[in-house]
Length: 159
Image: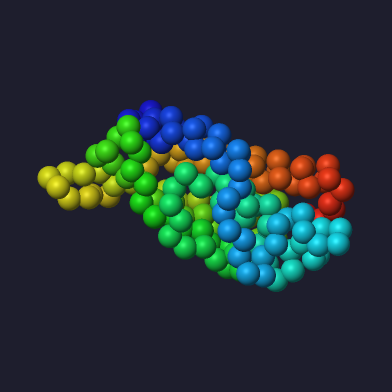
C-alpha cells in the first residue's frame, strides 16, 4: 500500500468516529432527514432525486473534509482540499455522486483526487482504487446503518 493511501486510511477511522458522534451538517432547503414525514414514506424524500440514506451516509463519511458544494437534488457532494496533519506534503479532494433512488452499490460513485507538493507546486498524483472502493463501502455501510435506525424508530421508507 502506498504512503498516501496509508495516510488517508489512518485518518479515515478517526474521521468516521467523529462523524458518528454527531451529524452537524445543515439540512438543505426542501431536503429532510430520511426519517422525516408522517411515516417517513414518500414524504421523507419529497423533492429529492437521490437516495436520502446514501446522501446522508456520504455527508457523514466525508465530514472530516471541508465541503465545497453540495447538491441534494442532483446528488453531488464536492469537498475542498484536505491536508492530513500527519502528511503536510499531500492533499486530497473528494467528489461523491449519488446516482439514483435505490440504496444500492451501483447508485454511488466516489472520486478521490490526490496532489503532492513538489518544488513548491501542487502536482496531481495517483490515488489507489482500493482506497476509493473502501470509502464507497464505508458510505454504503453508513447509509444502511441510517436506514436500520430509521426502521427501528418506526420510520418506513420507499427504499
